[in-house]
Length: 458
Image 1: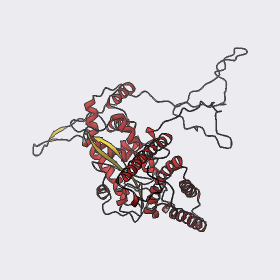
Image 2: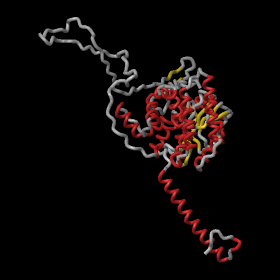
Image 3: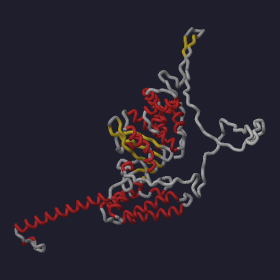
Image 4: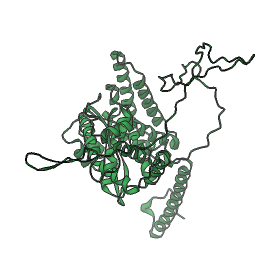
């Protein structure tokens, strides 16, 4: 039997083999215990949308307790709101006709208005058929026959006007409804039967106008001082594509690309150099053309939460608290008080440097520390400018409707359909951010009117 205190140099071959056998058995036992502990930890703490970048759709949602219905009106301490009275298109006079006591006819007596109540309704929808007639004339001087051309919007092959086509685009893309359901809605509401081919042709006819408008948005995004970007997957003709968004508070420009590489940023931004780039830490996003950048803190606090849940790591808890405090300060700070902002910013920066100088005890936290040290200038850059957000939530919100559309439709059958959708969603999201009517914007575009030529504040 080999003694654990024996000198290895004094052992013979048989004793060394015995010792090696014991050590191998011990290592196997320890590896099994480590695997069991690791498996137990993974079963205890799983990655969720709250502690990682897993999409919210993949998370488990608990049942919400049924709450008692509250009273109508505004909350206590809040001013209530209700629909205001507008100018009436039609007035219905509710006069007293007969005395309820003696039965006398009161219709000829003078009466006074003592109350008003308005009801808003829609008139029955009925299609309007406009017919364009071409005329021909013979010149009395040279006897040459002249034939007038059709007015714009009445070209040969076109069956439906711009307002109807705008409604089809609005229902099919903004809500997103299939062509079959759009057919049912138009038939049920307006009594108009439209074939699926006519719907597709109307969408194709709008492609050039939508592309010109989207390019207008693109040029304004390139001129913006602060640009946020993100991407999500898309399915185009059975191939995996990526839908990219480049956005500001007033603009959103989408493109479809078969790649997630940095080349997309070069193709879209060209020679433009924004002052600040806001994104996640994807390697291609880090090839941004901006002078400075801000990484999304929403992603970072979720990753820190996983280290907190798994290891109860105090370092991760303190850093997460710092990020939350800095983001809350950003939302509540007064742009007029510059001195206080600078003192608070320096305090946050100092606390961050002190935490990054420490070495966490767990591997997950150490990996996060390495990421934060690498991107140290981009962690709290938003404290230097009020127009820089601490998160990239605005980019994710710009892609939310596209994710819903992808799940409803399953993807695009052709590249032209994907590119048309990118142009259209750029217009819809830009209109939403500017507080403008989406349907009115589409109608104006299909009528050939400029809608985004005047830049909003960037």
